[in-house]
Image (cartoon, rainbow, N blue to C red; front, side, top):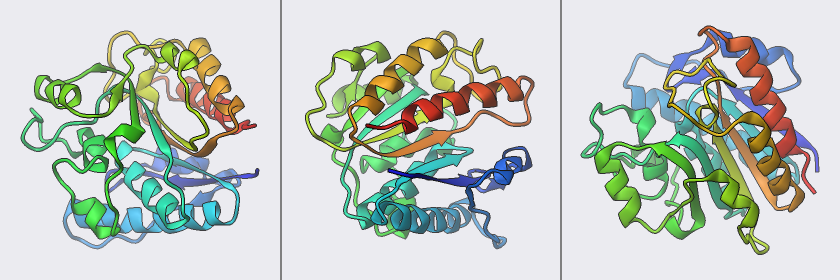
Length: 256
């Protein structure tokens, strides 16, 4: 299976020139002309283009890979996969739960809500713009989610998603024959390995251990999509963060 990568150089609806520099690679560049409108409306335009690209790649029998500046683009990834007839299990690697709603979030930050949105909780405008039904919670695995807000933790605990606090537990997990979509935010890693993070969380798995997990998942041959929420390209340590992130991405792409 060939991989095809879509680069979306935005943080929510704000361009990331530092991430856009990766366009020199043989990747599809998702850069849209955005109107002067609300953040949600602008994000919906970005997501529509990404969903269309993912659908085309997946329906064509290739492995879609998304690299973007935030986790909300995962909504577009699911929309594209669904349109291509895929309904995968989602494994969400993140230091944060991204399971806040507007009611539980201390800050109201949209980037802390995408997994909750995907599961049908809270804000649904981005899903509705793509005519996307939520993913079933029992098809979601969150790991490690070590930095949860109090209300967010309550939601996670009451939900039907699986929360594996130790990512190494995935090495003992039975995935049966289900296709898998792997989403990883680089802040899953210890900041010593990926220092250029907008929202660093103390601790985290080290790169060699995460690579072992990724190689195991790739070896199942069941990965049907990969999405990466990138390092912060304009912060100190961006170059080493990029190198580590792309090396881990390569481990996942070696499927079968």
